[in-house]
Amino acid sequence: MTTAHRDYHPDLARAARLLPHGLAGPRSLRIVRVLQAGLTRVQRARGVDVRTLPSGASVRIFGPAGASADAPALVWIHGGGFVLGEAAQDDQLCQRFAAELGAVVVSVDYRLAPEHPFPAALDDCHEALALARDLDGVDPMRVAIGGASAGGGLAAQLALRVKERGETAPVLQLLAYPMLDDRTAADGPSPMESRLRMWNSSSNRFGWSSYLGGAAPEIVAPARREDLAGLAPAWIGVGDLDLFHDEDVAYAKQLRESGVDCDLEVIPGAYHAFDLMQTKAPVSREFFRMQTAALRTAFASPGRDGT
Image (cartoon, rainbow, N blue to C red; front, side, top):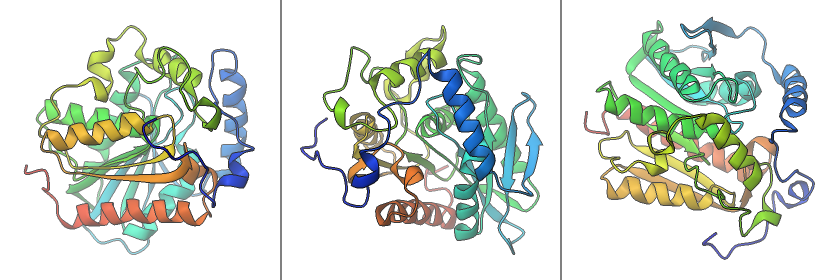
C-alpha cells in the first residue's frame, strides 16, 4: 500500500473493527452463500421486473417514477469476488440510483464461479447490456455500466469487450473499488492484512482462481491489458484501506496514459465495500453522491469517448 494512511475513517471506525477480514474460501464458500442468501431475502425489493437472459441468467429492472420516454440506463453488476452474491443484494442501491437519476437500472444476476468460470459472468453482463439498450423507454445512446468489487471488475471487462467488438461504447464505466488484477496478493498476504475488512488476500486468490478456471489471466484481468485506448470514460472510487487500492490507482493511471478520461476518488480510511456495509454513514452518502454526480454528467453528455 503506497499511502501512509492507516486509521479507519471516523464515520466507519466503530463498525469496521467488528467486521470479518475476508469472506470467501474453498471451505467457507457454501456456508457464506447460505448466510448471504438469507440476508438478501430480507433486503429483496418487491414488484421488481425480472427477465431471463439468453444464457439462463437473469436481470432485475428498476424504473424511476415519471421516467421520460428516452430515459438513461445503468447496467449494474453486484460484487462478491466472482463467487458470492446475487443481484437482489443491491436492490436498495439500485432503487436509489433510479430515483436519484431518473434512470432505468438493470441489475445483473450473473452466474457465479467456480461452477461457472470465465467467460460465463462476462457473457451474462454483455447480454444484460444488449437488453438494456433495447428496453422500451431507454435511450440506447445513454447507457452506462457499473458495479462494485468483482462487479466493477466485470464492468471493466465488459468495457474492453465492447470496444474490441466495435460496439457502441457505454457513456461511462462506474467502477466502485473494482477487482481488476489477479496478481494482487498472489504471492501471499498484503502488507496491510490486519487492517483489511470484507476481502483479504486469501479471499482474493480464491476468487480469482475460481473465476479464471483455465483461462489465461492476460486476456481476463483488465489490469493486465496493454491497450486501453478508446475505452469508455471511467470513474473509479476506492478506499485507502482496501486491498484493491493500489491496483485501482494504477489502473486509473493506465487509463489516463492511454487517453481515456478517468476520475479517481480515494477515500481516506475506507475499507472494502464500506458504503454497502454502512450505508447511512456520512462518508458512504458522500461516496454515493460522487457516483451519481459522475453518472449525471455522463448521461448529460453522451459520446464523451469520442465515438
